[in-house]
Image 1 (tube, helix red, strand yellow):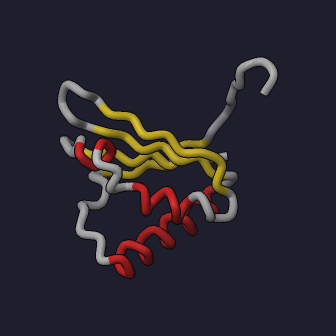
Image 2 (tube, rainbow, N blue to C red):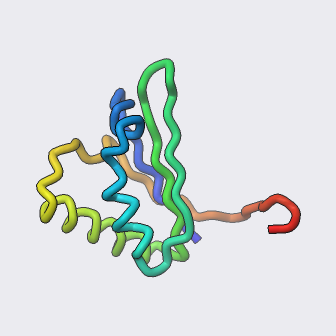
Length: 97
């Protein structure tokens, strides 16, 4: 598994306004999508989006699909300030899951 980590500098409205929901619609349908988490630092407005995929190919394909949807929908929001791919080496779930 891989985690695609996207960083956004001082754009708290990106996640508090719900303007990012179109991205979730796209990636949640992508082959190999596992989960997504969105985090915000309420003091400085920075935010991080973490998307989990079965492999790097799936993450890259979803990234391309998001770009296509961005153009098709005419989305003007800024892209991430930085994107990194991390290999997931372990994960833990609450008991019973």
